[in-house]
Length: 252
Image (cartoon, rainbow, N blue to C red):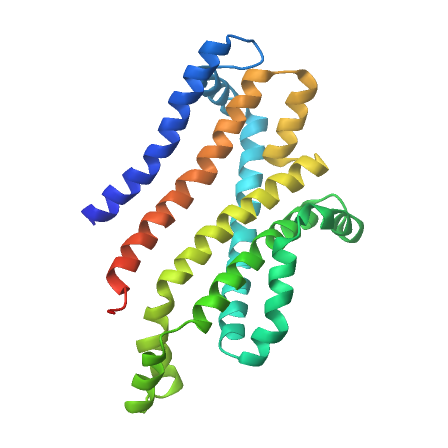
C-alpha cells in the first residue's frame, strides 16, 4: 500500500507544480484578466459557497458518474470481444480508429437534434466521447495477449470460464485500468463540452453565465475546480495502473 501512496503522491505533485507556475506567470504579467492561482482558489471557494453552483456541480458529477459507467462497460466489453475475433478486428478496428480520430464536437448537433438540450444529450455525448478510446485499448490489448497464455490454456485443458478467470483477466487487468483512466478523462471532456455548448446547467453552464457577467476570478476558480475533478481520479488510476503493471508484468 505504501508504494501505491507514493505513486499517487508523485502524480498528484504535477498539479501543484502547475499552480506554482500559474502564480509566477500571473505575477509577472500583472493583469486583471490573468488572476493569480491564489485568486483562483478564492474564486473557487466563493463559488462553492453559492447553493446554485453546488447544485450545478452535483449535476455534473451525477452525469459524469453515469456516463463514465456506461462508456467504460460498453467500451471495455466491446473492445475485449472485438480483440478476441480476427473478423471483428478487421471490421470494427478501422471504424473505431476513424471515429476516435475525428473531433467528436462535429457530431454534437446530431445529439441536439435527436435528444434536445437536456441531460439526455449531454449524457449521450459524454458516453460517445469516452467509449471509443476504451474499446480501442481493450481491443489491442486482447489482440496482443502473449501466445504462451493460449498454450497454457490448451495444455491444462481449461474451460472457458476457468481460462478467463485464471489467465485472461489477470493478463488484461493492467489494460482495463488504462482503459478506465483514459475513458474517464475523455468522458469528462465530452460532458464539459456538452454543457458549454448547451448552456443548460452543470459546471459548463455556470462558466457561460459567469462569462456574461465578466467575473474572471470565479471563472478561473471554476476552471481550477474542473482541474481537480479531472486530475485527482485520473492520477489515482494512473498510480493503480503502475502498481498493477509491476505486479502482473509478464516475464520475458
